[in-house]
Length: 249
Figure (tube, rainbow, N blue to C red):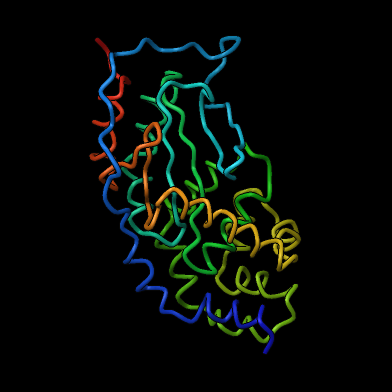
């Protein structure tokens, strides 16, 4: 067995149920500075900040005003139940009440904790940047369904296949090809994005290296204006955004 196949086998060898449960974001690096209440910032030409998406050098996707005074970053794992809970409880109010004002930008970055994360991350990036946030939300909003497909599949068998088939096999057997096909990414399109084994793995390693540099040791990990948030839920995060200035006088 060559080195790349050993890597793939290792990605799927650990029980995924254990990985899903161990996804806490960890403690804060420092306090979030309290700022004055800020006035909303109008979107260009009367549009909506919710339609503005910008890719970053850190491989993230910023939703909203890229020059917002309050910058929120989330490191998320697609197999993390706590990340799914945050999306279910906080995604809508975060976008409608804060990102839409132009005061808060929301950058989502991948932290892949296993091979399933790697596959989902690759597929969600297999289309226009504007689709990344909606597709990520779909995974987390349908977390139980997605994980049922993953848990029922023999993903370790992918290591016996040629490299160009390994990620595609994982997506096929776990039901992910069908899941994304129902959401606008055809099976052929997803399979094409997954066929370059090294490109998919190297990209996952690159995003994880940046997460490491930031000190994101678990998911979700949140940062507001560069400081790590002590909390993993919307109830933890919303008061911090307000304290930073995203509030009315």
